Amino acid sequence: MFYEGYDNYMRSGFPHDDLSPLSCTGFDPLGGYSATLIDSLDTLVIMGNYSEFEKQMWWVVDNINFDLNVNVSVFETNIRILGGLLSSHLLITHSSLPLLTSGRPYNNELLSLATDLGKRLLPAFNTPTGVPYGTVNLHYGVPEGETPVTCTAGGGTFSLEFGILSSLTNNPAFENAARAAVHGLWHFRSSENLIGNHINTSNGQWIHRGSGVGAGADSFYEYLLKSAIFFNDWEYMNLWNQSYTALLKWTKIGNWYVEVDYEKLGVTSPAFGSLQCYWPGVQVLNGDVKEALLTWLEFYGIWRRFGFTPEAYDLSKGVLYEYGKGYPLRPELAESLYYLSTALNDDTVYLFGRDIVENINNYTKTECGYAAIDDVTTHKLRDHMDSFFLSETCKYLYLLYSPDNFVNTGNYIFNTEGHIFPVSAQFFNMNPIPQNDGLFKKKC
Image (tube, rainbow, N blue to C red; front, side, top):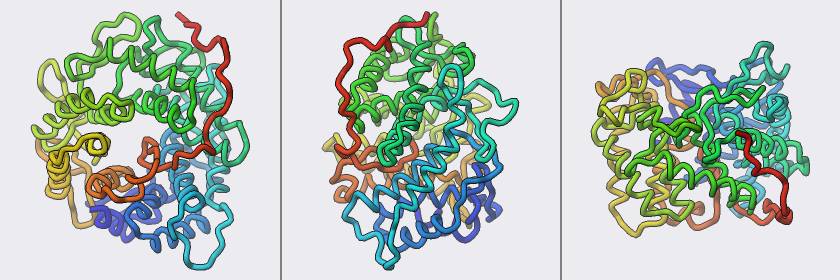
């Protein structure tokens, strides 16, 4: 499945960002820097194709330049491109895998690209709250007239990539910016330790007041826990514990999760969305395997009903929202199943995985790759294969059936785009716990 998508991208989409699998062409929705290729590099390593990894890694080194007059999503560029470059660099420098055999010496070129890109993202963080703008121009900085409103995930999903970049370059600017963004969001929490979904980065006003684990907030919570683990960071763990307790108390109904007003606490959106499906995986990482399994099974029931997990489903009425009928080949259900497989001694997980693989193959495979589902009720296709299909969906499904893979026998943290980072004491935060830094004073 991976190679069906990858080979078709290389034939018909490359060097563009993404593949249009129905028209067999490529296009550039992200920045015009071959995003799918960069997103796929560590998947090639995981699948043992070291020669293709080396070939394409050197192509990236020789051809990619980020000094572009193009407006890009700060969030997407971080998780896909910066994350992909850092993962590939660390696989070369921090593993014993024979990745480079051509004889050409590697002189940290991927890290140099990552550093250059990171510096081009930093201007977005120059806001009164520290929470970054959603868009930056890679040459000129923040575009004139850029909206100050961004979502919580878009503002608070940088700690892994920026923290690693600071550690590797001995430049604290990246880690400081990422941590300041988290502080900026947390500062405007409610007395119940809930935060909203969209914030004005200029004044901290919540524009969308809904609090939940799904779209718009998802990876903010994911990164609190993953950063706590990866960096051995007490502060991120403290924030995670407070957030997790609040989310379980106020947004969990049965085994489902809804959105509530972050202050008034009433339900604002009784919806399930495909992006929520990452949550059981995070719960497994937190040690709450039973809770994770019960919620995952509910999500899987939606998959069984429609063949895929839709973007938005009304739990109170049992119907799809008109705007939420699509399935863009998202990985989250498979991602959480993979995490569950690492904690459960139950072969049933492989039957679930087979169902996911079969549906993707039976309903989304085209002449030129795999296409997003435009409507889960009709299985009508849309002419787009997002890069995350190769970076995440195929990767998690492959690892589900590969217990002896080096990722499964080693210690790795996945970023929210599925890029792997080796857990190492090199990245641990050794700072002592301060007695009182004022972080947890509430702004009400």
